[in-house]
Image 1 (cartoon, rainbow, N blue to C red):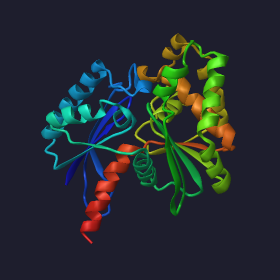
Image 2: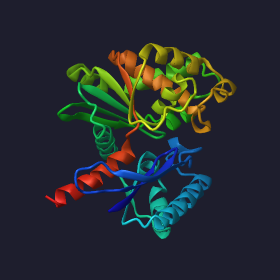
Image 3: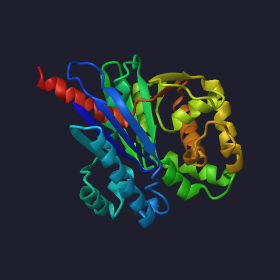
Length: 309
């Protein structure tokens, strides 16, 4: 069976097409692409998809539909996250996508967190109690887990695009704006801190996105290759985060390996990651390239395996 998964994120739309064996084997990826749609541009904190972003999103879905048809795909699973689920015109976007041939499942934050866990778990590297963190544009998901499974999960409306539109008023970011973000996180993440105090995660696993950018920057701007998982040196990361937070747009744009989409949002991601590492006291950091879209893909594959038993 050949399946296509579309992940409609706040910043980017992802398409991945894979052959699913249904015999317990991992999906075989035959095509993947990422498009910087920026669905949350302009008015994400007003929960509105602006017309330009709306059109970019639908145009991208039409292109995805043509690609999926060209690959003779048997099934399509499209999931939308924070930007669509929160937008007052989110249902309008879903309806227009249906007209373009894509049926969208708007998932909750809790469902999003569960699918992210499915993706990371599929690598088979969760050996100790860990905290998975997925920084999106609209929301950030946290999952506490161990080798037996998921223990705790939560989604918060503290994505990089939301924070940037609310607090990034100067460049480099001012101490006042930085402090305002920290205060907001203090007010928002109390239950996460309580859960971490209870379960004591030893490792932070960053799910793709900004964490991939961190890994590339730590690799002197060189591509990290087709990997699923990579430990990151935490001392080197701490020096990198300080440099990112202190830098201007022009300085970040000149950093080798940092894609244009993340030139500004990486500052928010660095502040968020630093807050978690220091606030919870985690001393190990790793990148997982398996994220929500891989979680959806593995969920479909698991359904096939179950049906064959």
